[in-house]
Length: 90
Picture 1 (cartoon, one colour):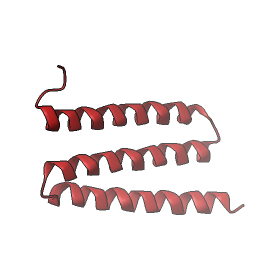
Picture 2: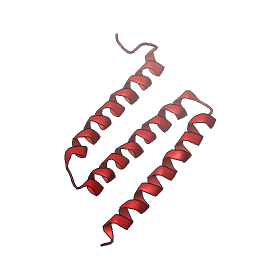
Picture 3: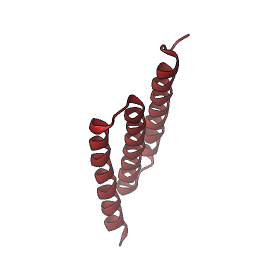
Picture 4: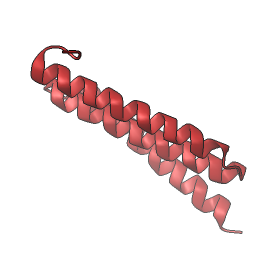
């Protein structure tokens, strides 16, 4: 009974967080802040995918969320390694 309302509220909160992350992405002073903002946006996108999976009542979206999490993690590590060493592949 209350689950659709709770899911709708949670989706709204995460969308608001994504909008605030976009503002932070465009106003951040350093590249490190932008990388962390993109990583936070990946986590918010993960939450949206999982919430949609709960709303749809299927476990298929959990697999998509896992792939998105892996891609976001590898991307964040690659950006940070590039900042530290100047190249990704040694």
